[in-house]
Amino acid sequence: MIGDNVGISNSTIVSSCRVVISDNVLIGGGCRIWDTNFHSLIPLEREFCNEKHIKSKCVLIKKNSFIGGGSIILPGVIIGKNSVIGAGSVVRGVIPDNQIWAGNPAVKIRDVN
Image 1 (cartoon, one colour):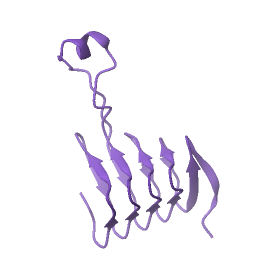
Image 2 (cartoon, rainbow, N blue to C red):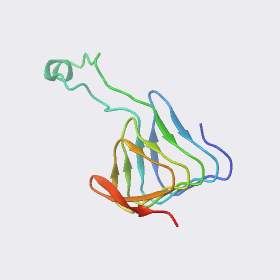
Image 3 (cartoon, rainbow, N blue to C red):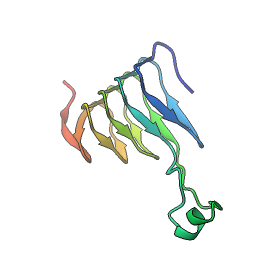
Image 4 (cartoon, rainbow, N blue to C red):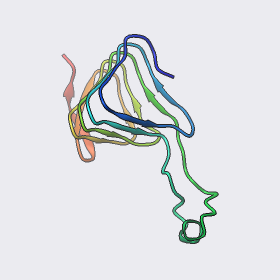
């Protein structure tokens, strides 16, 4: 689900569970948002194309967030309201409201003023 007034530049969203992008979110160029691991971690399932154990977990990007270009948003991520993700970051877990995170893996830089 994509909310109102959302800007997405040349990015990829893959959803096998659910990706929610709330109102007024900006997503920079070349971002990748995935709610799935795409393939099983069990080697025999991958080998015989019988993948039953593919993990997926919903993604939620809350209102007024900004995701810098080239970032990767992994399954299960929640990005809080008004939060900023620095360009090229790999995000996993929960980003609280009103914080700036960046890096690989993304870590807190500071609060939004």
